[in-house]
Amino acid sequence: MISISELSKKLLAEKSVALFCHVRPDGDSIGSALALSLALETLGIRAEVFCDDQIPSRFFFLNAPKKIKKEFCGDYSALVAIDCADVTRLGSFTNIFSQHKNTYNIDHHISNDRYAKYSYVVNSASNCENVYDLICQMNVDVTQEIANLLAMGVMTDTGNFRHKNVTAQTLFTAGKLLEKGADLNNIYYHMFSAQTKQRAKLFGVVMSKLRYFIDGRFAVATVTKQDLQNCEAQPDETEGFIDFVMGVIGVEVGACVLEMQKNKYKVSLRSKSADVNAVASTFGGGGHTLASGCQIAGEYEEVIDRIREAVNRELPVL
Ligand SMILES: [Mn+2]
Image (cartoon, rainbow, N blue to C red; front, side, top):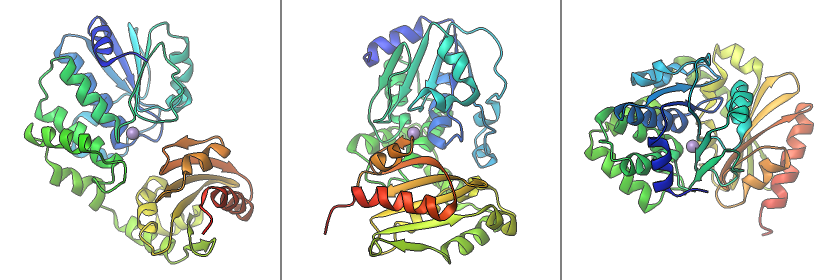
């Protein structure tokens, strides 16, 4: 791994930089990629942000996310993966990235496998904290636009400062961003409060059929394609469901199981203390100790059985 001063020096020597968010982009990936791109542009370095997936419209209360490109084109002296624990998180850009001679990996996931030429991985709550430090190191002024983008990432990856991953450094960074004009109240509304009528309906449907296992210590929320269809809701509108599940008294681990296609499920895991990074790893996924995810193929009840067994191995014996 390189130090933040080396990283800053190397980036400042680049002519043009392509930055990549991960697939199913979240506030942290979008925010940290765009903030860094704006900082680089201030320094006269051409910077463009790409994402293999469509950017969800809920991010468009800020202007910058509208500029993210889906089609990769052009020559860049460096490619930078942002908030990506492994190179496949780049989706269809994985090959372009792997074949480029000059690549950077700026991330905060403990499972990051250092896939780039230069890796800068610090296990902070959000990648936006790392990018804030980097921008300061580069001596670039944190504009209000940059502050809003970074605050969006800090707030989304910490569940609006509620998750256990929050550190004094997180709040210090948030304080600095607030000072620079970040509108935390507005970000909170768009990231956590605003929802469509369809999502509100889906929420009711999904929570009414919550399932409990292991003496109520493990809860599973299931979202079928049929549920989505009945509520006219989109798969990405299930984000945040899992956090509600974690509030149920007695629940130590929660899962949101989303049917992507027949016999293929996307599983989001949250935990109060058990290691769900280990659970997700069993199925080829990963993330953080208390928040991770994976995809599992198979018939629904069989998928639930397999997750339940993996969770059971991680839960402490009472
Ligand atoms: Mn992140």
